[in-house]
Length: 61
Ligand SMILES: [Zn+2]
Image 1 (cartoon, rainbow, N blue to C red):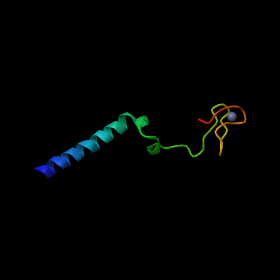
Image 2 (cartoon, protein in one colour; image 1 turned 135 degrees about the vertical axis):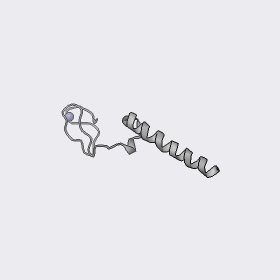
Image 3 (cartoon, rainbow, N blue to C red; image 1 turned 45 degrees about the vertical axis):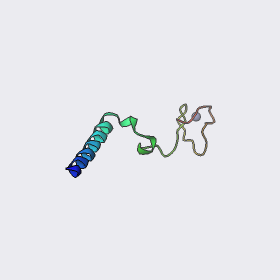
Image 4 (spheres, rainbow, N blue to C red; image 1 turned 180 degrees about the vertical axis):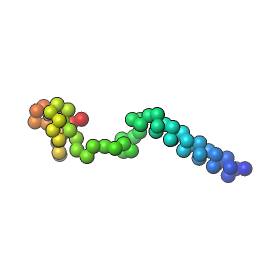
């Protein structure tokens, strides 16, 4: 009986996680999201490698 309860609980957790991921894909922690390999300037769109700010004065997105 106890094992059945635990399995049911785990199944419920998985279900909640799946529904949550389907409804709120942006609510995931940053590590679980697909992140861009290189940050891009929000003004000119240039790739910013190794720096947080761009030559044009824009900042990395
Ligand atoms: Zn820029």
